Length: 277
Picture 1: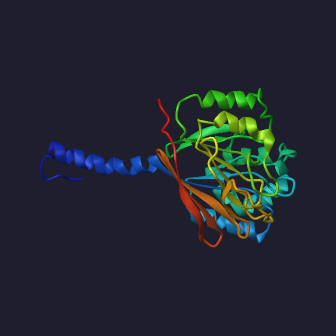
Picture 2: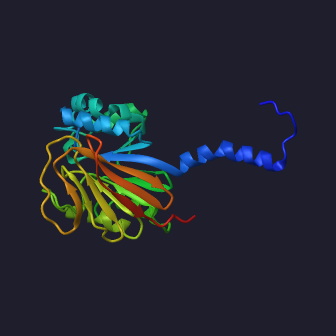
Picture 3: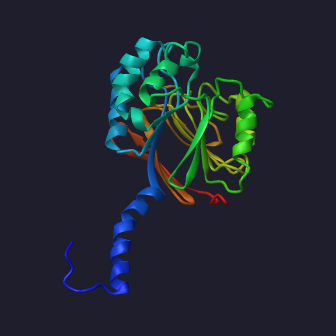
């Protein structure tokens, strides 16, 4: 750009602020979608995949289960058809359906997507939050390698952390509470604000417990299952397929359960304490 006169210091500062503000905003806010229990080759899961794609996510969390057994063919034909277009921005965790044949389906599929091996559990940061992909199918006992790793990563004060795995700690759905994943939950007490899970085939938002709001986003396309009357459940829906949308920013997560037809079924916000250091 050719300038007709020298810029004053104030004018130069204004130009610099215009130039850097969009990039700064892009880094400080992120749209994240999450769902599991689809990838079964049906029309419903294709619709959920299209819903998420239209939502233009910065990150997509797949909460596990590729039906029926997570074979290489099911990953290629079922998961790939529904969610494959989101591959480069996907952060997966394995479900119980694909874990047995993980060496055939889960590991090779994600190795091709990412160009490297995928870890059983890992972390990354986005929108001012630390995100933990944990593994309810691998060893997560009190003295496991996974728990030692998790504890080492959440030492820093603050709760702007989101963790996700497949089988929920608490659920009002047919599969119920998964007591064996208590070590994962307990390690996050006072260290995280949000936990996501699938496994139960419906949408649930549970009342905050131990400072954590748990969401179950399992309406990804496979057969919907009942949700029983449970005083711990603040919101439930098992009549429509859909996914969870999160808008993450520093100190805040805005959430919405969105039906496959675009309707917002439940929404709100979760605040967190910013991470120090």
